[in-house]
Image (cartoon, rainbow, N blue to C red):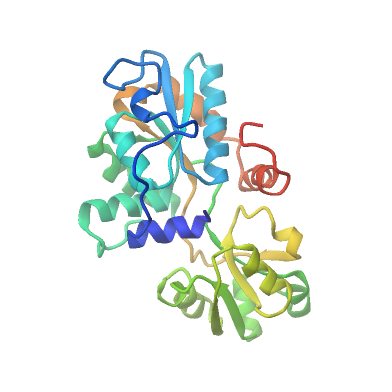
Length: 306
């Protein structure tokens, strides 16, 4: 599942839900963690939650490794949608989940204030995390420090197209006056981070939308072949090189601050020791690092645990 789809699903509230909270091996969360019959983990035992896409699984493995080194017993449970794992985190069925600041802030904002709630996330990571903490704390969640790694919406063009028109940023594209057909989801004309934002903030003329799955092989192939000139993808897309594509810099900060950060159940995993342990990763993991890790799984077919 692409990052953009996750963000759009959180904003629109249309993510498909699975029937129950099921682990990769088929064990329910109520049976996880080595705890008692209530399903709560025992002392020193933590359940790391993960969404079903590769990047989330990789981050969960990194969290689990750090926490094991710190003396905790850990297990990883994977579910499909935020609409499932976020309530599980609130209930203590999960203890730690890798998250994205802006996307979770808007998810909780709309959960509290309705689907038409005024946005609380922005391109400013400090303001976004502050808003997120305000929404998370009443739900028994503790938001840890945001990391350097950012997985947010991004736009890519072919390397040849960028070289021909001298493009490094989205501002460069707007100034070039080149019309582009954009390979993106069919919701792009309505999303402020997509066509409206490109036109208003950057002066880019979007001649049309090619309604392909966001960041998909088909969408990137369409740009490689010259059918389209630009594709909506993510900053941690690990397969761009395979298609001869390059990202254009979001130099006017159209996208929200989706920095990676851990979110924990405050009661079961809110200790300073856990925060300090996970913050070790936040201090060193960069967007480039995360892209390379995604490449190991998406392109080289290693398992997230590897």
